[in-house]
Amino acid sequence: MIMKKIDVSTSINGIKLPLCIMNASGVLCTTDQELSNLLNSCSGGVVTKSCTYKPRKGNVSPRYFEWNTGSINSMGLPNLGINFYLNFLEKKEINKPVFLSISGLSIEENYFLIQKANGSSKVTAIELNLSCPNLLEKEDMLSYNFYKISNFIENIFKFNKKPLGVKLPPYFQDTHIKNIALILNKFPIFFVTCINSLPNGIFIDTNKESVVIRPKKGFGGIGGPIIKPFALANIHKFYTYLRKDISIIGCGGISSGKDIFEHILCGASAVQIGTQFMKEGISVFRRLKKELTFILEKKNYLSIDNFKGKLKVFQ
Ligand code: DHB
Image (tube, protein in one colour):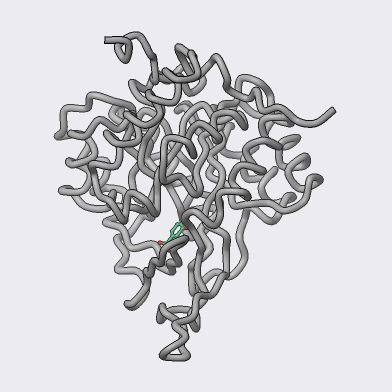
């Protein structure tokens, strides 16, 4: 009964999500079946696997591994190509916001993909992925090159008409976040998703005395509970430095309602679930919704706006 009046919906700069919890790009969102499952679930939105122009098989396996407190991946952008995602959406009844994740292999390819996404009325928003750490053919990450980012985004907004946000990697210095925020604040960006996996980690199987994934000599992006402190720190700093109308979508280390509460306290308007969705499957959204609602109920909060960004610090 009391549960009823607690509102766990949200708005990403005017885009209404019935629930502030969705999948993180990459996890179980590549195929027709996986995306249909997400559309049919109670998740507040659907994010697609980052797409390229041409379909890609990705890196060789094993390319994903998980342990108690984290995960490592070097998938290499396996996806069915942008046309598949646009055609899929065209033939489906869409009942919640759809975020098309785009990760072109070059700046030119990204312009092309954004142009194509602009032509689809079924794409609610574009999540431009500036932070894929696993490409064998491309070592540098755009999001660690401030000069290139600024120019790139300026060019995008010369033609882009769709709501667009950027997915960022973790940053580890205050000045880096300040500088990225200064750049983003100049443009009509809708949202920032932070953080992508911590790039270039390594996990070791002690018995085998070996790395656990094959690509890139075992190096890959780290996700899961161990990255939560970095996610929270990045969200909190971006919340301080970004224009207030740019929403933050928190991602990194969420496996419980308590983790979601912490992300929102740092300033997230919505959250994405990666590693835990991979571990638990589609039922994760219902469980997390229940856990978050329970926390709000205990704390006497009626909606996420009651505590969003209100993290207390020592004076
Ligand atoms: C892949 C991993 C990422 O973290 C990302 O942002 C995009 C793609 C991948 O390896 O497929």
